[in-house]
Each structure stands twice: as C-alpha cells, then as structure tokens.
Length: 307
Length: 319
Image (cartoon, rainbow over all chains, first blue to last red; front, side):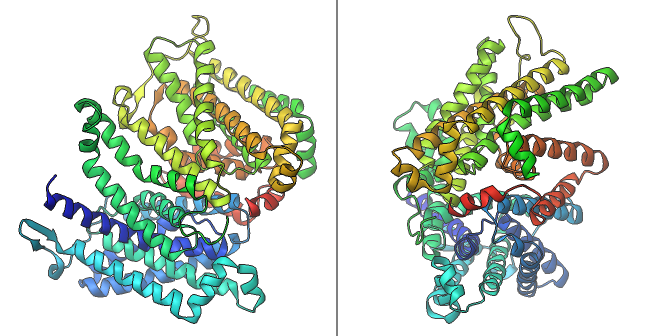
C-alpha cells in the first residue's frame, strides 16, 4: 500500500468525519437536552442540500445561495420544531420514533413531489474546484480540503459556544440535569427550540457541503442519519466532544475499511474468500465498532448521563 | 379502550380467537369473491401482524423498544431460501428452522444489547440489524444485493398446500392466532409479571433474587423466533428474498405498527399491521406518493396520542 493512497484515504476519512460531525452535533444536543430521539434529522441534511442547490441556481452565486439556503434551513428547523417536535419531547421513546418516522415519510415524499425523483446537481464554485498538490504525487481535490476546514472551524466555534458562553452553559447543564435547569428558571422549551433549529442548520450545512460530491436526492438523508446515530452513541449522548471524536473515528474506520478490507483479509483468507467477505466486512465495520464500544462502555465514550 | 385491553390481556385465548375469526371471515369473503389480490393481501397482513405482535410483546411487556426487528424477520426469510437451495422445503423443517435461526440471532445480539438501556438499546439493536443487512447483501450465492427468487413455495409432507394464496393465508392466520395465544399466556404468567416488574423497577426485581437480564434475553429470543416465522411467511408470499427485508425502514415500520395499535396489548400489533397495510394498499391505488399520506397519518397519530401508551410512559422514561 502506497503512502499516497494512504494519505489521501486518511484525508477522505477525516472529510467524511467532519460531515458526520456536522450532522451528529445537532442530533446529540437534541438527544441530550430533551432525551429526544429524532429520526428526522437526516431530513434536515437532505433539505439543506436541496435548498442550497436550488438557491445557488436561482441566484447564480454560490456564497449567496449558501447563505440563503442556511437561513432557510434554520427557518425550517424552527417551523418543524414548533409544528411537530415540540409536542413530542415529553413523550416516551416509542411515540418519538413514531412521530419522527412519520416526518421522514412526509418530507421525503414531499420533496420527491416537488423536485421529482431525479438527482439535483450542485456544482463546486469555480474558485474552489480543481485540486492542489499536497506533496509530490498527491493531488487532492480542493473542495474536500474546504469541507475539512469548514468542519474544523464549525467544531471550534461550537466548542467556544458550548464551553464559553452563557447559552452553552445552559445547554451543557440541560443535557445532564434538565430538571434542575428548569427549576432554576431557564425556559427549557425555548432552549430546546434554539438548539433544535441550530442543529437543523448544521445538518443543512453538511448536506450542502456534501452536495457536490454525492447526488442530491430525496433519500440521501437516510444513510447519513443511521451513521450519525452510530456516531452519537459511540461518543456518548449529549456530548459534543464525543460527537467529534466519534465522527472522526467512524469516518476513518469506514473509509480505510473500504479501501483496505480486502487486502487485510487476504492475509488470513484465500483470494476469492477475501473478495467476497471484504465488502461485507467494510460495510459492517462502523457497526462492529459501535457494538464493541457499547459492549465495553454502555453509555458511550463520553456519555455524561446514564440513559 | 383500556378496559377492553385489560379484558383482552386477561383472556389471551379469547383475543387470539377473535383475531383469527376476523381474519378467517375476511379470507372467506375474498375466497367467495374469487379475489386473489385480497387473499394475497390478507396473507401478507397476517404475516406482518405476527411480526408486530412479537415486537409488541417486547415493547409492552419488557419495555424493550427494538429498532432492529426487521433482522429476525429477514433471517427467517433467508433460512427458508437457504434451506430451499439445499432441497429442504417442507414446512415441518423450514418453519422450525426459521424460528431457531431468528431466535439464535436475537439471543446472541441481545446478550450484548441488553447491557444498554433506553436510547442506547434502540440504537444498538438498529446497528445489529444493519450488520445482518450487510451480511445478507454480501451472500453472492443467494443473490447478494438484489436478492433471489424462491425455487418454489414450501410444502407440507410433499403436498403443495401453499400453492394458492388462500392456503398461505390460512397458515399465516393459524400462526398469528397461536402467537397471540401463547404470548398472551406468557404475558399473564409469572414470566410476564417479572418482565413488567423489571420494566417498572429493576432494582426491586433484582433484590427479590430474580434475573431481569435472563428474562429479557428469553423474551428477545422468543420474539425474534416469532418474527422469523413471519419472515418465512412473507418470503413464501413474495416467493422472493432480499436484504431489503432487513432494511431499517422495515424495522421502523414495525415500531409504527406497534405504536399505532397501542403497545399495551398484543392485539394492538394486529391492529397496527392491518391499518398500515390497508393504508398502503388504499393510498397506493390513488397516488404514487402514498407514503406522504401514510406519513401524515403516522405524524397525526403521534401528535394526538392515538396509541394506548400510558402504561409505557413509566418504563419508557427510564428505559
């Protein structure tokens, strides 16, 4: 295995990791603050990609389209919270699964009705397309580096928000001791509304960043949602730090697994056996990782509260 | 509703009989009208109800919200397919095989999953189901991603009793009735009492010298086995087996059925399965966007608290 391949695969893994982090950040906070299981979070990712792709085409500017699209994702987050999710937060998990599963069906079909089943294209802005030479022999797409940079910037911003501001203090307290925070006079419903809408916008940002690399279609949120759950559970529910570590771990394990599973299996299996088992194993790796983590630490790596 | 539920819970034989009779009347009507479409739909409905009833047992009695119930269903279907490829298609072989394979999977994964609680349990069961999905998708000898058609429907002592859909529907109704009766009896027994007690207060049950873990594991294996039977029925109906049986949407839909019908009583699973299947069929006739209608009904039911879920609240909040 060459160094060039290894470095580019590690970069790919980290880039997948930061996308997952953007999705998982909102999910873990919503989980943590309200003990709310939101299956419809993948829908926000999909909506973000659709909004940005449409607005970029209308306005003709990537930056303007992105800004408007993110604002739209934020507004949609507010609306969905007020219309549906607000009424589900104090219910048991079964009803939350029921309600949010319904939201997936409604929004996914709604988008399919409006935009049709054909994938939407979101071109990379001209200034950020092309590739850069990282070192001799490795040309890496600039857009993927941009994703990496944006992801890390958002992670830093979130860290400052959560650990250095009054709002962040309430969110942290709310994710470990919600009753106490409410008793101290914090309007926990409003806190939840803000966290939810902000999380929706981050998921939308992830969708928009990933948009040029994948095809934008109504079901695109499904796979990301399940992997984001894996991230949240590995990291520990309610923990931003856990979401970050979990997201990078899952991104790397998944990407490197897909690149090297067959080669590694060749060491212990025959060639045809490795060729068969490799793809299955690489698809399963992140779930194996999750089962392993939960088997050893039932509330995740950084889980503050026993679920 | 809850008074009726209590009566049905205390009389599992009555509930099983009532459900079986209702299905039989519907099947008789479909047979009389010569509607193969409705006979096939009834067979599928009863099979889905069997899977929903087994999940309802887990959720309602043990407080275990499994988000991976599609996995044992799919494993039952694959057991049928694999056995068929090796020349075994007698119901007396394939049904026990489907049950045991699915029960074994549920027990093995449950042994790990039961270390967790609440949301973590929901997520780890989902993860195991995803693993099963990817294993199935990698079985290139059995169709891989695309799945594979059955060589033929199962037989009974060489007789092709399932050749027509009314035979299959009868078998599905029989198994559904049996499951309702046996799981109902179990819920009313000491076993069910321990499960419910452990859901409400695990520490007290442990202090009494009982093992919540062991009881839950047994419940998971049993419900998994029943789901495996449902998978074997569904595979016979479609004459096709694919990894899609274990897609997480299937597991989500199973939860939707249980929650729609009300998790407090096993019959709720039947009601949920019937409602979802009918919505499926009815809306599917009018629009290709039928999932939108189904979704609106599901969201509406969740917002209006249509399910009889009060009993779950105490357990759900804790795990």
